[in-house]
Length: 196
Ligand SMILES: Nc1nc2c(ncn2[C@@H]2O[C@H](COP(=O)(O)OP(=O)(O)OP(=O)(O)O)[C@@H](O)[C@H]2O)c(=O)[nH]1
Ligand SMILES: [Mg+2]
Image (cartoon, rainbow, N blue to C red; front, side, top):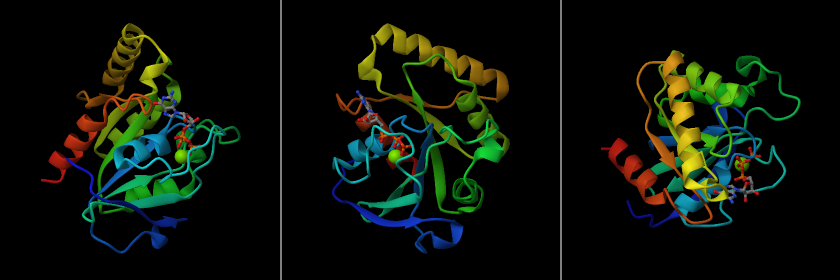
């Protein structure tokens, strides 16, 4: 899919502030600092569209971006940031769980995982929670430019196999880098197909 336009629509603090449109939505979620806003900018082809920061917790609200006038990317606040409690449910900002559990427009959740690490409990637990809620999700491994291809492969393989123990089926997994641009075409094609 080719991107012809990408524009910021609005920020929402809760489900009531979400846009009243009927566009299909694809949401990005993952640990704070994993690269959600960066990946959104890569897909959009616009560096400054979503705010990128080296300080975790840059995205505090649910941010909506209208793509090609016909679908939307949703940048959610990161989980696992400093003072948030260990348990996903308790630590989740209300805006995030409210959005994920109640938004009818939501087509698919992209769970972003830092490819540099071996499987992290918080990411596995979050995916398990999505599966439990019957929310469709795929994985997008980020920052693949930061380590050797073989190491990326082993971290991805370990995550997918740990995940298979807590939920059925293997989700699609994309390997991405905002530095090299890799993964952009695959993710956009997936979104294009998911809207058919
Ligand atoms: N080398 C490299 N750096 C990346 C990549 N993706 C993100 N980064 C860097 O990681 C940092 C965090 O990126 P963000 O996109 O702000 O992360 P986020 O998940 O939106 O963070 P919060 O909104 O705080 O939860 C920034 O310094 C980015 O430049 C990547 O693919 N490669
Ligand atoms: Mg962000």
